[in-house]
Image (tube, rainbow, N blue to C red; front, side, top):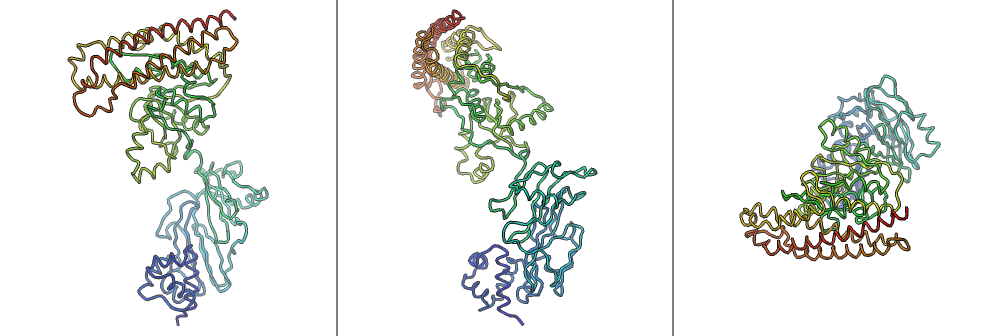
Length: 596
């Protein structure tokens, strides 16, 4: 005979095992919460049409709900401590005459776990004596009846009842070790051979498996060698944290992009890398101490690469020297070299050292690698082309979910053809020594004729002016070639304007270094000169046609002969001012020589 009171108690118990409220169960059954309340208090029974869905939700057969036995499996979970399957309904089918006999193996359950970890069945059951928990490892027989008394729930801190180290082929019981470590009230524990020696005949991976009781029942957690298991703050649950070898993301690295007063992508990427490792510096300081603020290069081929900081002159060594850093380059690697270099990249990231590289995404500009996922299978980065992607996909749900995983970073799309890992830090020169070094670079780079097909310094100014005044070319060029030259010209002017703005800022910031020293007056004049150059360039650049704004119509109307002549005249004026600046820089350096 069906007892509505017993049925109600069973429904309430099973609902709570599923961590559901009466309202949540009612919503899934499409009934009112009042109906569920009446069932659980024994005032009524569920409708016959509701029983199949109720059975499915609670994971118990209709018979076990309406005709409660003296032995009932409240929950059964097949797990390896990481992956888990609820097999409650399946296991309850083997309860016969208030007794459960079940041979547990990898073939027992409909679901399979394909790992080399130890696998087991966790059981929570109820008898007339109370609620208990037990477990059985694979390839063992589980037998319980109404007289079985397993583990009782722990009402305070969790209680570890089983511990093993190894895998499903070979493992050892380490419960005594865990009881020893419990004396030290550990908050987290790293699985290692030092704490848990591996069996000599075990050739596979090693895992630490812990079974523990809390007030909710019995649980399993497993971690691989090198990973950690942590207590929750209230010490009632354990959880695993992945090894840094699985993923490592340096959070909080800022955005890159043109138009942010960081238009030299190399210096912008280096700024993010240095800032991430705790170096207190600015973009303008990097441009200054490296000498990149003095740069100008140009190729008659009219290529965007002319604006790159390292295309024709080595500004990188002075930069790393100024910060006392050692840099390791990895350029133009073959496939095998790339595989080996990736290990170095991952190790750098784990040490909070962000590599910088060129051609990470979209086009050959510098960016910074900010982390990795999938044990290095996916590298993450900041690049100068991220804004376009974020804008395009800002309403894409899948993209937004991906950003949660990657902490807001985009994937590296290309293996870079130049990459720099920044290693140890040693002696850091004084700011004054760095200023003198920067002025020497100015003098040298402006008087270096060329490199790799690029003109440098004064020769670059001349080549650029000649290209602007080559009227026959502009008259005969097709729209595509004309538009490309328009884009290159705008990009190079952006780079030059940014460089001289940085030079003016760096010199102004350096003025206190020579207060009451020889050369102070000359340095002030040099700072004023570059402030003038920066103002001239910024004023002209602001009025230039942005190639991105030219969406239709002949491109030749967007860049007239008069505009090109005005720009050529400006470059000639700037070159003359640069020459005056060189004279002043030499005077400052001369005062140093006199002092020595």
